[in-house]
View 1: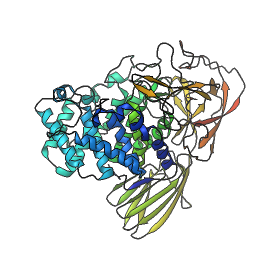
View 2: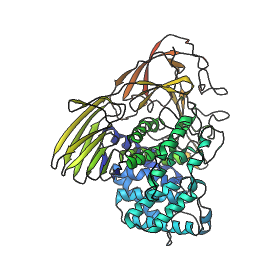
View 3: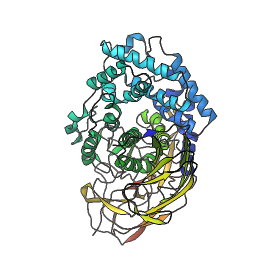
View 4: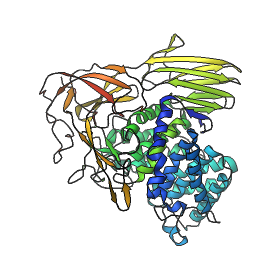
Length: 604
């Protein structure tokens, strides 16, 4: 098992389409949430009266690295303003969360785990020397309260106990004090053992439970990787065993598990919460860093390049709470919600459809993916997620120019001031790999020995082949490399500006219904597909001008609507019999097709 370390925002910078993606995010909701949304603008975390639990920490978790990656002085100053206000409220005994002394015993300390995790992120970005002491005091107070029984883990804290290890590991590297080990043991003892509840994942219920809550489950996947060293336990790859159960009974074509809001089976018309998308990415980032196992990086790519952009509007001012594989229209349900535990608007694009956690949490996705592009161990650097970025650290500068995943050409420029080893991870689906003009076999990685004072350019390209993959209910999905393809559905956007419960929705952060306008009732009638690269434009995952397309042959079938709904296709087609002639259509990347059919039958 080979472990990797993350670089910081001072060492990695985005290039090309990735930088543009972060700029759009900064220009959109993420970069303006403290100006327009009261739960951040007026939060109790900074002395206000609005929500004082997870929303400001969630927002800072992505806003802080976004600010530093873009080297934006305004964003950096605003992040510091929030951190300063949070630190100013810390009590002498170390308690940091905004609640009264009498409320501490009943305060769900998931917020303690989250804010200390965020403070580690802020320290890695800013190198603010106040932060280690602030985290130390917070966690020492937390340990003392837990060890004497004044507080205990319950509800969210009990299901997210492993999140505390981000800060505990941070402190142990610096102080090596035994109480940190004892705190780690308390958290695991009081926390949920997910291996004991896997039977609950095999049959979806129209019932909300912590055991099947999708965000808990995807966060959980990294639990062993972040905790077992400090607990002195052998690593067993438990994440893979739990992943296999979750995916078998709840998997989607883009590597997610359904959860609207709890596990929802394998139906293509059930949804997946956006919080779970970014948290699943974060888990995979840590799993790859801890294990060096390429499967986690490859799974990370699939989610990042498909599921993340799919649930966010082109301008990143609005987002969905849940996305569906087969999503023919995003209109409010006039009656009973289709979703198991979400309301009738959870699939709309808006400020806070259904619930506001995703409003603040989705913005960690792209910045943390950027910080996973390159990783290091000793004198070895790996290109883990090969998207355009530059790392400049410890006498080594490596720049990658590429439009991957939209095409498969890569140019690395290396300037080394010391002897080093450079590794490029090669995905399992890569074929006909060529390095500087020579064909090589796919062994999962390419290794280059770089000498001191050497400057080298490495050109790599490979081929990928579109595949028709099996899905439940005798449906199929088209995938080529890391990108899943969907039949896009044209739509009209209906804008809604209004105020509800004191929260204003006003352009550009209002709500939108995406009303489907084109035919969707198709099946594939050929398993041959043509991939055609396009230009990567100002909006990398544009819903109007995608950076790559696929030509496919389809035929209309009598698919039908889900019983009781006029804007939802049936879970499975009513008939596989063609009702028209063969047609040529253009498929879009899943992340570009805001309305789409992703799982369709192959008509023989």
